[in-house]
Image (cartoon, rainbow, N blue to C red; front, side):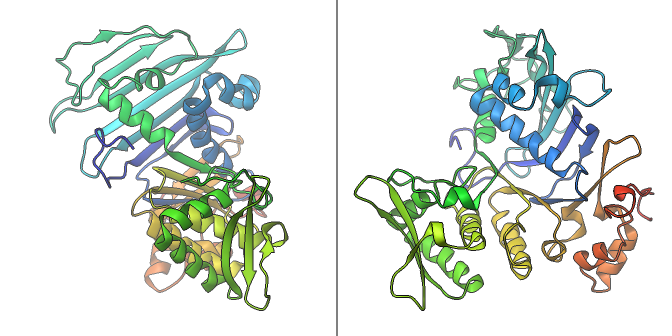
Length: 412
């Protein structure tokens, strides 16, 4: 994170996400997002699609809009069936707690088979009583930006045409130091970790060399272990300690350079004299090690997305993993999708968004905090996982018309 833009130790927070015409997300808005937000619902309810919205935005900044758009099948596969208008993504966030709310708005459509940025703007309110104004405002590659640390409506707007209609203004102008608020947003998004961790990828033997952060697939897990062993031994011991609590027979994990320049990740079980290569370790052990390395990164990502952490893990481990996520959310923001009642047991209603598909096939979303019945059960000592399995949420049961029961505000 750019130290000039955002004070050291501060963690930007997304408070609201609005999406239109993105596959099943015809018109969905998630408000009052918490540091740890969990998406719950049956298969096909739209959890992975919400997750992919964040991945799409991150990839637009990392590799360009065209590649992110084509990867998802272009407009034919990406836009909502029967929907009109562009794909719309709007993110409201604060760079630091108590700072002004900034809204990033992006609209993308297709022209002659190519994605086009139809509209892109950044808006905030200077002062508690001022009206919102856009300090970056672009349409079809033409627009203007107000530079400076605290752009004001009265400041000069500078016209900066973009080189292509598929260029994101924030990505382009965020490389210029004078556009400090734009730089801060670009840095924030480039710092996202939208995870697709795979135990198979973690079994690989990458080229030797320490790497500070786990990548999205986890295939550099050995490099991260090497880095922590050299630079942050206290973090590595913390990770190993937590791993041993959950997999009691684990003694050590090492990342050893091989003569051919590759790095070998090895795991030592207490009963055995020699460690085994990661390729022979269990899926659950490798997945848990990767999650712990991600959640206990000395310099955590600005945003972490984790999809279905219950895969390959024993159900009894998920309550503790949820608590690890909440602890890590003190210094980053975490979004999790899950089907697990065991993970859900560790959560509060305000942290859970319930998704289902309505009769038209589009995703609907509500916070469990709106459900008075659930809150009453929680006040009496119930846990969310049990309430979900007993059918008290009213929606989200895959055996009941795919979970498309009617939602009536706070009561069902």
